[in-house]
Figure 1 (spheres, helix red, strand yellow):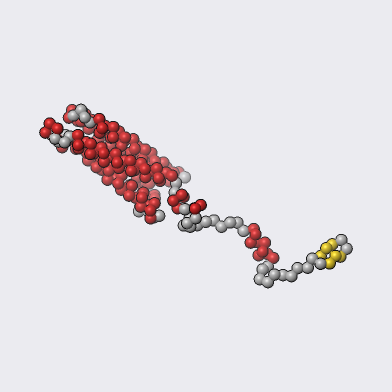
Figure 2: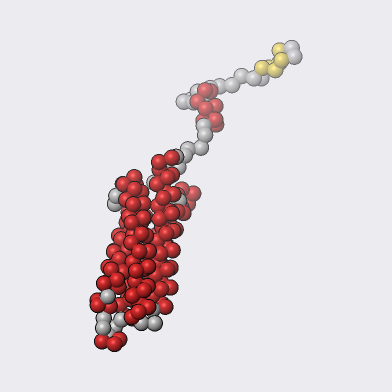
Length: 193
């Protein structure tokens, strides 16, 4: 150090291997963005999935349970009372077949959702899945409401103990309608946004 008039001059030796430009650029670099595949708590794959996927899984599970209980209660309420099964009524057979279709479709959707979460992959592409889910949810909702409306008259004529079946079938329709709204939302989000 030496002082020349009013100015203080400081002599520095250069540090080996570090240039002044690179030393300043290290301090100014932004933090790196974590990879979506890293296992840190801030960016796990589980937390990055939107909650609509989990609510859709819950609704699919409820549809699976309600359709199974509805088909079971429809078959059990006609178990040889007055010597006649529900197969003697074509309306009840139609309703039973629709419940089996809803059960199989819900099982597939539930399997697909769990597989997508567990394997971090897709069984079907998202675009095809959104279109297919919307169309099939609409179709099964229509089939369910038409089957229930036809079967209510036949069940009232057959027996007076079909109240459990009516409640469960109405709950099944509400869950299918909610699934239809969610699949419509996902499809509109894909098309518009």
